[in-house]
Image (cartoon, rainbow, N blue to C red; front, side):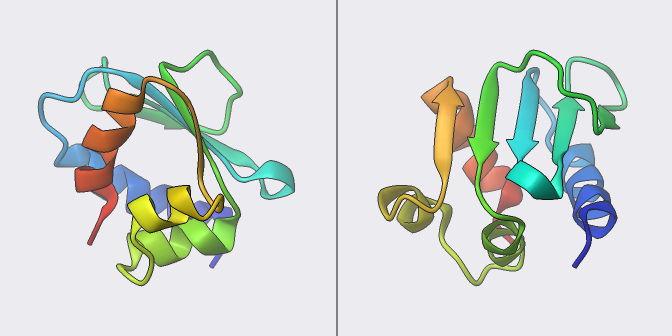
Length: 100
């Protein structure tokens, strides 16, 4: 799956994330990044490297597994496959939004 396909999935999930008012960055290293600003309505999604309240870093494959329900984000975090920088509380809220 490409970065564009993952971006589209995130766009669909964030449209249903009512009450989440934050700036989130998904960093996939050399595969690119996705920046989501849910303080705007509708959420603004881009590939810009802007300041975020929380940054989730992992491989694109790991993130696809999280979106598809094949990988539990908590387990990925404990195994070191998913790294969180910034607000851990916000990361936990995202957990519920991203899981399928």
